[in-house]
Length: 91
Image (cartoon, rainbow, N blue to C red):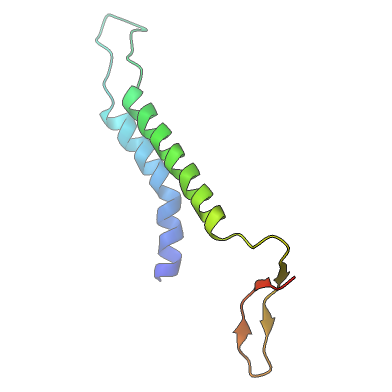
C-alpha cells in the first residue's frame, strides 16, 4: 500500500503547493491595475530548492563514482538463487 501511496503523494505535492500559493498570495489593491508585487519569497524558495537539489546530485555523484580504470561488473544471479549486486571490479 505504501509503495503505491508515496509516488502518488510525490506527484501531487507540487500541485498542492501551487494551489496554496494561489490561495494565499497577496492581491493587488483595487483600482491600481498592473501594480502587482513580484513574488520574491517564492522565487527565493525556488532558487534555494534548486541549489539544494543540485548540491544533492553533486554529492551523490561524487560519493558513488568508480575508481579510474576499474570495470563495471553487472548484477548476476548466483547458482543458489541469490542476486549479486553490480559493482566495480579490478581493472
